Image 1 (cartoon, rainbow, N blue to C red):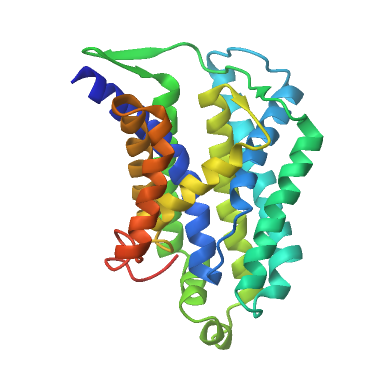
Image 2 (cartoon, one colour):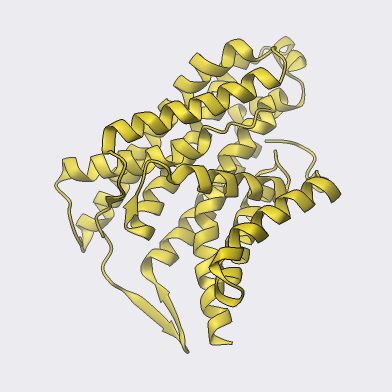
Length: 303
């Protein structure tokens, strides 16, 4: 029982990272029906940006007190801004001109952007894993035989808070309503005076910023990064978005946590080598038997 509860905590913290990445996938798909395969690499870029900011701040180890809060805020906001701008540039250069092209063209372009970003990061940091400073003190809480680390609490809280903020933004703000209108019918939205280009660029900005937040959290959680991290993480986050109902924010969050739990439980009770097999088997089964995902019908309004 202790093992199950420990893996429950591990799975939720891992799922929090997947959920943050999945939100970007689902937002972009919801508004322009594009599977942005470069999104996983934007997430890795978030870790690289975070590492660069920490280096500029002179941080190389554990930080405590108010300085820790200030450094975490500066780093995560900086990574989110830089990744958000990267997403806007990608949309402007690679996807905008292909908006009315056959769907295969932007899909291939997205794969090409993924390779471009990977090779830029390979050139920047080299082919070997790069250590990430261990910022947080070794604080952990014990609940019976279960150990909960401070960084696990941070991941779960950050994912839930950002999800709530994003949901409120989309539902209650003027720009959020423009995003929902664009997702439902671009032409009608344009006739109503909505600037389609700005709305879609804003969607890429927010989705990529969330990937930047996930990149910072991933660096703190794993203690290292690698230019190829985004490939596997991006595919699993995409699986999470499909499982929850791609185009649906709450579904992406739910799917992220479920995929994290499935991976953690499989690794512990069946074997590490079966974790990816089970995760992607779920993707295949969902696409076959419920392509709309778990919440695809309950929340029809995309984005």
